[in-house]
Image (cartoon, rainbow, N blue to C red; front, side, top):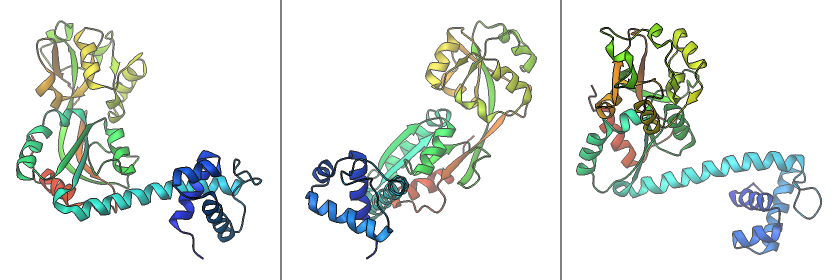
Length: 291
């Protein structure tokens, strides 16, 4: 016989519950049926999956099979979900993750237009930093991401959308506002710097020195801006955010170092087939002009 998905599902249920009876209840099967499935799997593999008869302690083979089975079952579930969603076509789901600077400035007008043209599609929008965007795309949590792909992750599909320069963000009463030229790295000496999740995207040696000596880190953009507005420190954020965040309490100041720019791309997982709704949204993204 060949190994079936149900064999792996039954095994994972028993291994995680450490009880054949509880697993049978979860699976809505009889204990005898679950036990037979485990026996068939062990016979096919040629080794015992559990130590003893109580099914509450995995063998070395069982521990290995559990890790592999959980990974494959998760992939199987995503595959079935994608197939079902694609089969629905005109009532598909679009799952998108984007960096906050894009999600609160350029994305809303695009979403409005897309929703007016395709009201039958369901939209699930999430904002997160670039690292989490990439992770969400690769794990299948979302279909499309908008962010910056680290150089350490080469095997991912990306299409360039636009460039976004970083700015120094400070409170309106910060002495940096009195400068009549772009901000230099040396101007930040003596300033309290607040790290954000975007620091990894900036490779300048001068910035790394500032970042590594910071004792404050805030990954949520809203919280970060609130602290800066209160005068607790300064930070670096994409200029795009100035469209929505700049105001009476915050100023975005240009950097003299013109290297500090990030590339924002639309990100999709390699070799993954998008459902009809997501592919339609992807075409709308690629056809947009962002400035």
